[in-house]
Length: 637
Image 1 (cartoon, rainbow, N blue to C red):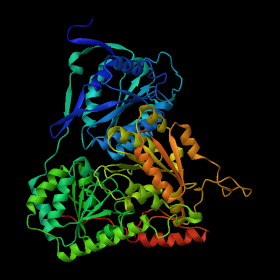
Image 2 (image 1 turned 45 degrees about the horizontal axis):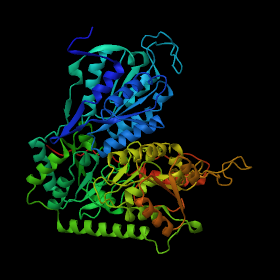
Image 3 (image 1 turned 180 degrees about the horizontal axis):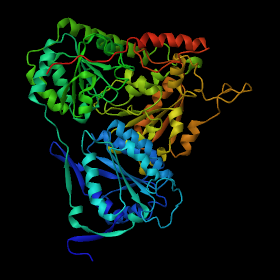
Image 4 (image 1 turned 120 degrees about the horizontal axis):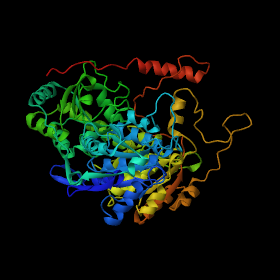
């Protein structure tokens, strides 16, 4: 029997009511932790969470708004993109049915956890009672009765639980909120809800549904670590900063600008760190690493001290440990995560980026890099800016084969015709590397490239999430035909929600990025072109007659087909002035790439081969492999 201190609800109803009462707080600013719940209903959740979301919507439409998605993986991508634009202070829950609906979300979960972005996954599960087993879509494992397909979420979730009984729900929900709001531990959180348990009623303490505010802390740096870092910086002759995504999540853009303006230390940016300084800042050398600028990579080669701020030093950032070539190079790592703070044998400052930068700025008063070093930084930056100008504005427009536009021209036109506060979104293919080099970021939130998992199909779904998070900005989704074909379904969701995204669909008849990589590795672009199978039995026949523009139009969006630079520019202007989503379709020449980064990425080449192209590629690989190094030089505390 219910009492005055309890309320009788189903497990699903209690979950929805609890989530609607959760808030995050940082720097004294509160906001709802969950903007809503994405969902696709099936037999596993339609009568549980589906009923609970309906009941909540009819009672209070703003409690936990429901959005119908078209693909479970895509819904997770949208939620993650939203969370990134909200500095991880707000996210979405995502509900699916049991079986394929749930396992579709596993890729999204991996993406969230690798990028350290919060999302709550609520997959349905099989019956806790086992009263009707085996169920439709149930996995039967001979050696274990309690394993379900949802156990696939365990290795890609930062927290995992399964609610076998209603009494387990409160502790699971509280643990989930702790992880979602922890800047170190955040990622995908998965709570599996068996179908029968979702619909089971229980007398819940009313206190479970009281407003809860989760404080997102700013860990302060230890004074001794700041002192050690100051000594190392003062002794360095060629210091360099590598700015990562942690600069953004700490909202440390102004602190970073103040630090480098006072010291003159130049900055290279990872994919996640692009925008930490705006492109025209005197100390900003742009992208660093395998897809970096020649300016940043030249400075990296001779840097004697690398100050990593909020970076996890991926292989692209370090050019597979070849970017930092000075024999005695040392590292200082500012990061809230101890895992990242100790990388490269660095002096770890386990603390908030903004607080650490402010402390370093104060402690380094009077310090500035040598004038000759500052001059070199300025000259290299100017040279790279001229390189970008040249590919943005080629002497002969439509410089590709047969008068096609190049991808460089497309990027340049979108960059220059968009507003500074607009956002570019990308994830996979050749486009992310080209954007990393070439895109001139004019706003800290203007660059959104998912490159922790580099997941094909993220682009449209991620663009939807970005647009929902920032309705006052235009969102340009840059996507190639390969990634578009993986997952374009959320164009339908954008139409449904009245959410505007501008999708630039680049048709290059295959996998341009892997094609180029294949060629460089001696594999002759094998298996990367969209071709008919010819009489030889190989995929080397005519181009496939796939009409992606017609496909996009069938999903309910307006499509503008363009072929020339003038037509493309006009299309961008039309899209900017529109109130609804638009797709700009353009064919480009896949064989004309962006300017060389003068860098490397470790992708092993066959050690033996009968192909001369592979033999030659192996010689190049061995040359670069010989320069790869471990970083073991300690900075004394």
